[in-house]
Every structure is written in C-alpha cells, then in structure tokens.
Image (cartoon, rainbow, N blue to C red; front, side, top):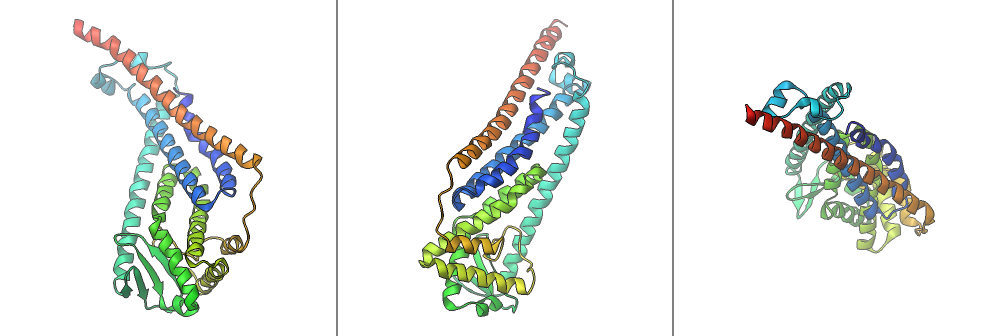
Length: 316
C-alpha cells in the first residue's frame, strides 16, 4: 500500500496540463462537465489517499491497536516511513478540512450579503436593477436566482445588447453554473495542483452561456458585440465586488470569446484530441485504481492482524 497510495497525490500534476490542452478541443458544455468531473475525481482520490496514509500510521499506535483488537506488527512491511507519512497526512487532512470549511463559510456569507444588497434595488421577475453608475452585471445564484445589473451597465448598452446580456446571465442560472464553480473550489481546496483547471473551467462556462445567448437571440454578431461592449464598460471603471460563485458576461478572455462567436468552429484534428482523452482517462484510472488497491491492501492487513489477535484474546 505504501507505494500505490502516493499515486493519487502525484497524478494531478500530470492531469492538469493535459486537461487544459484537451478542453480547447471540446464544445463549451462538454469541456465544463469534463473539467468539473476530473477535478472532483482527482481531488477525492488524493484525499482518500491521505486518509489511508493517516489510518495506516494510526493503527500502529498501541492505543488504537488495542481498541481495534489487532496486532500492529502484522500490518504490512513495517516501513520506517509509515509513521512519519501518517503524521504528515494527518496534518494535511486537518489543514484541508479547515480550508474547505473556511471557503464554504466565506461563499455563504458573500451570497447572503449579495442577496441582501440586491433586495434594495428595483426588481422585476428574476431581474434586479441596482442604482449604481459603475457598469456591472452578474448572475447571482440562490433561491431564487437573480440577474443583478446596475444602471451604469444598462446605459452602456443598446436595447438589443441588453437582451443578449440578460440571456447570457439567465443561461448561467438555468444551467446552474455556480455548482460547477463550487465543485472546482472544493477540488482546489483539497489539492492545490488543481488550481490550474479553474481558468479553463471559467472560460468554458462563459462560452457555454455565450452560445446559449446567441441561440436565444438568433444573432451571433449581436451577441459578440454585446459581450465586448459590456466588458469594455465594466473594465473601464475597475473590478466590482461580487460573490466568487457569481458569473458575469464580462469575465475571462473576452477577445477570445468574441472571436469564437464570430468564427465558424473548425473541426479539430482527431488524433490529438483522442490522444489527450486517452491520457486523461489513464490519469483517472491510475488515480482511482491506486486508491482502490491501497484500500484493499490496508483492509486485508487489518483482517490478518485482527485474525491473530482474536483467538489469542479468546484463549486468555
């Protein structure tokens, strides 16, 4: 187990650059789903590996061994690295738990504050207009989800461009894109190497909403113009304070998004995407199989140790 259990901790360093490259060859909707699923699988696998490392060391402690009715000397090969690795794993799990809890509380506070602030503006259905000269607009998740837009943004766009903006933000709410972002935040908290997947995921979600807005309005050129003008207006006044789990049409590499809207997609060469897909599947398979193999070995060792301790205890 001591060797296989390290693989899930190392695989993300290989999978992240491969996934970033592969996402460029996928449709936005598919790319967002693949990146999110990959992040969660790798993050949970690495966390499970840390848990098994910590458990393997804890079982060698006399107090834990007595409570579990097992013989510690029969647990594996007794490698001198087991106990130090277990201590480091336990420390890492503690830090990760604190990070996950802190980020969850922070996101909830931000969303509650944003909903309270949006309640002070003029509302009509899912649209909330906030009186603010700074151009801004974003999709605020919650129950109910809302589109928050400032009067400054409304003045910066024409009537048609406003409809595009609203369609874009409604696509974020309808497809629950904030769930994708929350999953990515959780994955990053559990394994820092997965931070590299946040940018391509954010881009894929914005492109997904761009395509939904273009389909809803039936005008790709208008959609591209609305995205570009909204981004220019928002960036002219600097960044706005909004929840991290909110999404906005002005985020990400806007010139690249505008180009994608104005350009007919060209099918990518088949060999490269297939090769990348195979490599990503291999990364997931190696990570998951290593966790399963390590768990099986640890379970078998515990059963052996308990088997010897049980008859001995019964004889006494």
